[in-house]
Length: 383
Image (cartoon, rainbow, N blue to C red):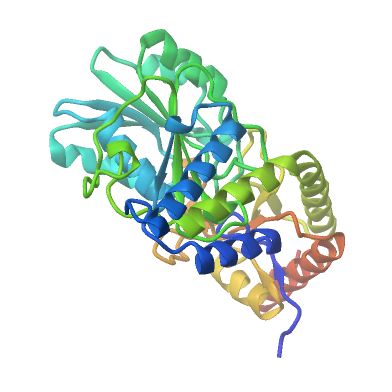
């Protein structure tokens, strides 16, 4: 039975930091009231909710009222696409073919509401260039939605440049910052109307998404309910998870410089070991990448079979986004980048976390080399 596991799928989920878990358990046990209630128990929860909001706001150098909580980043992004970028019939939204399904599918659905969306090509580079964004803007454009870091390839979008374009034309820009938070500094540039993040990717409990709004930004709520979150999102707030998210955010950002440098060194070592041990391996995405992500294509290999082999060998990796209904099909993002179906199906994403060690990387690389060689040998194509 496999006992030692090496987890290299941190872009899908992160374990709860023990320091965060301790705070979460304490609040869950001691502060269980509804933050909308007027009695003592409710007011205790309300005070913790306000504290969490203020602590998160400080990390982004914004005011507390610019922080809005949701159940997930997907809900936050969906709300803002519909309520900020495309609130009325005839709206026109610009996004990219490489977006996370939370934005990609949401923008596709606009056509059923008398609205339109343009999906910009990214090519092998893997991200939209500001120049391409500007060319796509028309007099009907009402909003732009782009991710700051691609969760599958790790390629970084020039959000500063895209925000400058958005500001020039006074068009709200919504940024999906989920894959960037804790790995790269995130700045609310002029032109960024809102940015969304997830607790699940910063070593906090699952179940919290939050948006940072720029000054003066308002939007139509998707869930009205009881008018919580200053009318931005109805429904009782998950106070223990939100408070834990605030604690996790402070920790992950405070440790980001050291952790990112470590992950980048280990990511580069992992790739070197794999490239030295195998031929016919390529990196997917030509643009600059965030520190922890390595999306590799293996010639003459079945990606799904490789993932199963690696899992049996104790290494957890993935094809790409875990949100694609548990799918192990060829990545839509890689196909949209112009790679062949064969290459996309033969690609595997490895994403490191702050707990990844050099031993983990060396063992994982050895497992990858062994599994690929075994699979190629069985197909009569040893490389």
